[in-house]
Length: 405
Image 1 (cartoon, rainbow, N blue to C red):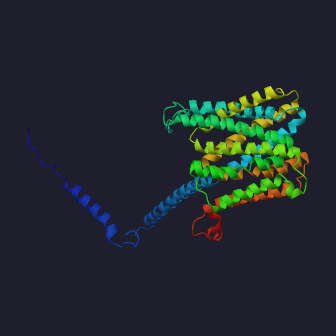
Image 2: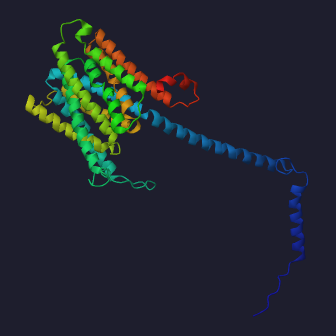
Image 3: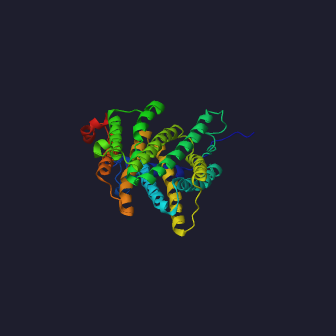
């Protein structure tokens, strides 16, 4: 093998290299600027621009992240309350349509059947979408089946979710049917006041069965709301009459039954909140349809729509019921059961307003007083929620600190 020899370096090349190296290093040795150690104004300007752009871009990204966090925080804090308020308006419109359908021969159970049909039919394709199209995106992790929370029964206590779904369907169906029967004997506003005073029970049941924290103000607010219900029933001790009005007493009985069923349903919904909401809607709708059809069939016979006007109103009952039910289920995923149930009492306010605008029914003095009391309870609940989200050093929180007790 030939011996290796060092590669000879051309003298002119070596001289040129040393010259270039010395001229380059002289930029940093002669006339250094205070910032970058160079005396080239153009280069210094470029470096200043590059240095200024970096924090600006970083600040922009940080601002975008901050805005995203604020948006998520807002949805987490107020999303449940907003959805609950929307559900109250939608359900108030449904009750108004039910009242308007009575002259056309549609009883409470007939209207209930179409309400549950409207909940069930749109929920089936939604359930199929979540089941069949999950994990189709490349960047999306494949989710489990929507039935994982109910099947198999012996996995992770799924049988409890199944029992909860069935109980929720039965109680929810009973609550709606009883509420519609109450509307047949009293005004929309009075029936709504009693039916949606469920916070009295929900606050107590949520504390014992869900472990939700409570305080002095929520309890007093619940009692305050109950007082409004008592005023709405117009007892003889307030009106000076010899006894209760017969229709008012029957309607009150139906409304109280609806109140109990609604409170229990709210607790169960919160308990099984890990169940997919579309599955909740399907089970709830099917059970409600069966209940309403059986009651209607064996009481006065089932009534089918025959005219365009009543068909359109039944379609409104179905569609608005679906939107309202979906809103309340999603609300309970964001918010605790007590505040949701209290805000649902806004149905009372919407009921009085709608019956006055559409039906021309004016509330009497006692109805107005009772409705105002219930509305005050809703305002206190919303204010308490907002104050609890403020920082501890906030002046507004310090001023309203009593409402957090």
